[in-house]
Image (tube, rainbow, N blue to C red; front, side):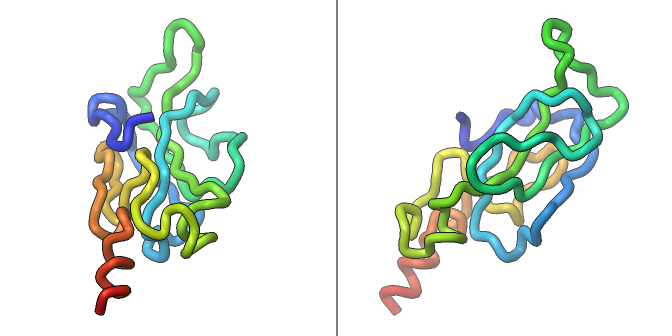
Amino acid sequence: MSSLLNASEITHEEEVVWLEDPGTLDYVRQALDKTKRRNTKPPYARDGRMIGYAILDDEAEPDPDSGLYRRRVFFLLPHDRDSLPRGPYHVGAPGEAVDPRTIEPRNPGAKTPRSQGRTAIASATS
């Protein structure tokens, strides 16, 4: 899974829907999931919880072979920093994690010192 998706993979995003306030999270994981619909809440079959998802515009077309749309889904797993602040991601973050404050439609998002846990290092040494 790529940490930063290629912008060409998300050109038909119209809106990002947040199920939780992204301002309270250091990072979210992102992935492209295949779904039957382009504009409703997608199913979620991972451990953890879905934090948000993308809605696609009217011009988005499904894959000709599968008939499914590729949409971004944002999620966290049970061992992520929000649930286990002193856990495996106390410092650092999963490869697919980005700062939710940098996510917009058609923008893959970015890693920041906050998403990478570098603010935890700074506060621990202060």
